[in-house]
Image 1 (cartoon, rainbow, N blue to C red):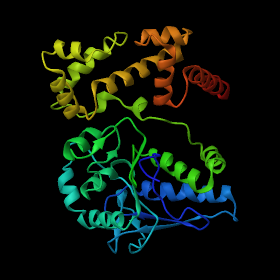
Image 2: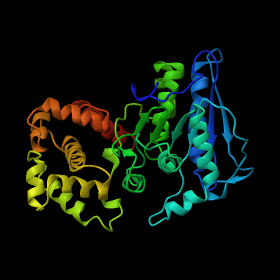
Image 3: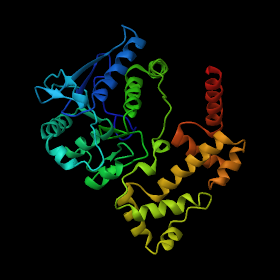
Amino acid sequence: MGAEDGRPAAGGGGPGELRVGVLAYPGCFASEVFGVPDLLTMAGHVAGPAAPGYRVTVVSPRRRVTASGGASLDVRPLREVDVLVVPGFELPAGADVGALLARLTPETGAIRAQAAAGTAVVSLCVGAFLLAGAGLLDGRRATTSWLHAGELARRFPGADVRPQHLVVTDRGVTTTAAFSAMYDFALDLIRRHHGARVARTTARVALLDDARASQTPYADPRLLPQPGREFSQRVMRRLDQNLAERYDLAALADAFQVSTRTLLRRFAEETGHSPLVHLQASRVRRARHLLESTDRTVAAIAAAVGYRDPGTFASLFARHTGHRPHAYRTAFRRRRVDGASAR
């Protein structure tokens, strides 16, 4: 499996165990080292003792590893595995990513070697920077935390960064969005190894949403790094103030006295995505608010956020939130009622 079906090319998923290695390194998030293995353990219990399980090992090219928060990890030497999982790390504002990657050359070398041997490689959150440092994202589609997608795209222009996606797989290399997206990946792995029923039951046991489709609803542009983003901020402000208007790239470029090509290039350089991606995310956020706070029909809400065809709007909304508009409104109101009754 690969880019054709959007799933990781994880071998060993037949009648035997699936061998999963989690690559630990200095400063990695300890929770991401153990998050996927813990969910796989739960899936094994759900599937039962007769089903093929998972053999998970925390591995490293180093003899000792101290993770985030000072946690010491018990690691084993790198060995042949079916899937290599690379967790993320702390990436505060202004951090020197280049210097950090330079200190992790043993890890990027190990990642490169595993990929060359045919291992399916998976990054969690900003672990994508290590995959990019190993050269695995050149010419591939990829994602990472929406907060750092722009930095990934700027630092590694050979990668086709898709900041709206939760999980992206391209030719045996999988990248995921921020933190909890490791569970979206793990559930897909469980689904392929044990089937949809086990994945669905595991999600219910763990209280996980197994129907998410995008990280865009979680993105907050106000949290993104601001320096050097003056142009894109002005474009975003204009789009946000005119959600109901038809998207017209030529007219938008004229408003800022640049060519369409220049607008797209400068916007992508500052944000990592296109004006249309931003507009769609803003429209969905506004629609969510209207579905939650008003009784307006879906057709009326679609028109309010720029869609004459309610069907087109509903498809976009489902792609971003994992729910059709009517289902989203029903679920929101049910949660609100349940929350009120619990108090």
